Length: 164
Image 1: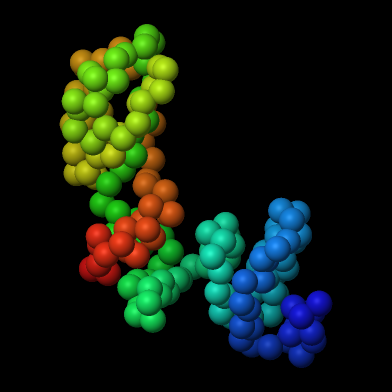
Image 2 (image 1 turned 120 degrees about the horizontal axis):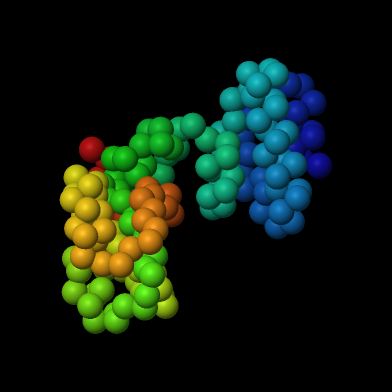
């Protein structure tokens, strides 16, 4: 109801504090769709505070991360992991089960399941790492992903990266 009242006069800037908190998934999606439509139709700028990363990923192009009253990042959402998490996640699936002791000896090892393993690899080493894994292990599938947004943000808050 507060969002509707705030929209009555078609503001150019709309300030929202945790607009989807306490809502079910369908309602959260409806609120996000409404906010995207406002931006598209009226050019409304939305200033959003949220702890829900799904809100942030879906609605924001630029983010400011504040930790203990200090800005620790101010820039494009896409830049969080590019600037701050200089690593990639490499997921491997094997044709046979491998011992955790063998996998944990590989630099960047993060976790192991029955026929799979996950590694954190420096962006500059992904190609060489992947080739090595394909040559040395019975790999049937290899996936390279950006580090999840949550991890990039957590690194910022822990002081492990700086806005460079």
